[in-house]
Image 1 (cartoon, rainbow, N blue to C red):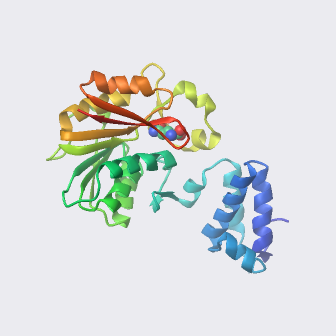
Image 2: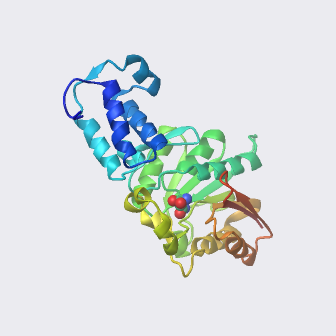
Image 3: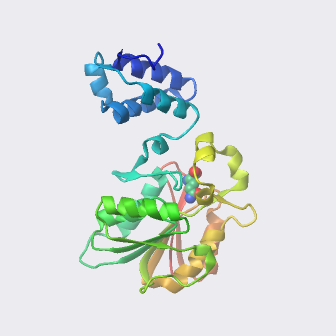
Length: 290
Ligand code: GLN
């Protein structure tokens, strides 16, 4: 069937897409992508396609275009412009990484350590990207004052838009953590500093999937093989002078460098440094207190 023909049934449209996507993606992912396409373009869930599959659609040009993009490895989140994170629907674009499930685990660690209470806390998210961490914490801890910074103007604009959509009062600031310049806020002391910085080494590039390599922003992903913990060094130094007493730093880390990253915090005066694995059993998170 040619998907660009008019008046095709939903059932055959989804089935054809599923088969085509299976030539490029593992079968479960192909099925999920075809279902997501249908939900996004026509508003029908998977169950509704089963129930109302005989209904026809006349304009399938958008459908074919989306299918072509998926066949070229473009991530669905960039095609639709949205991604889910911690139960929230967020805007994403080519300037920001698509939020990952492991980052939800980092948010969870912060929330568990800081139960909801009457005290307002100050948090800074360094390299906020889409703003996913800042926004997810803001929703669950509405009394907190949250700052989010990034070096990329496009990322800051996306983070600000996501904050606005959920009516969170997040201060978005342009700041380069590698610059060692003064932080541009009147109050630059925080209880919590969090970051998911670039940490994938050039050597690890070879193992990455084309959907990541071709479409996600390299400045948000990669560090040099010669200094793979460069961001942690700057975050640790920043943390030492910008954490309130009892404050903590939470970072996502490269699963192959847990000891080196931990050492970086110890060398910079942090005494209580803990590592944590993600649900896939990989060293993925670190928490450091002074
Ligand atoms: N976990 C991401 C990936 O493997 C990388 C995120 C990052 O560099 N901060 O694609």
